[in-house]
Length: 74
Image 1: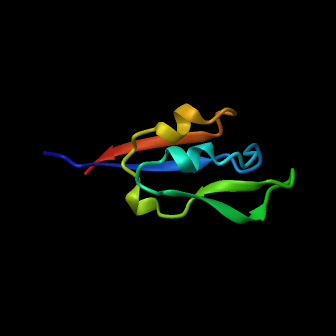
Image 2: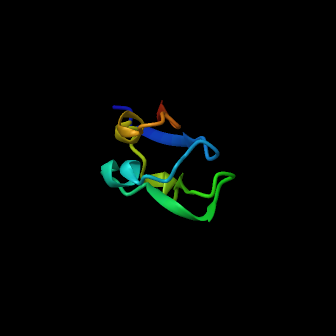
């Protein structure tokens, strides 16, 4: 049976750093960056990308729709 792995891409410039995605991630993939984007917000990024299972919880709860989730079978 194929294993599903996921990866996320965050639109850094549109992220407002609300941390909802980080809280909703069951695997602890997402963290907030120490750096700020052009609007002055700390943004979400995949700190532990190998843990992502592609569940898309982060994309569903993101109020600004800045997260795209990709899934692949390996």
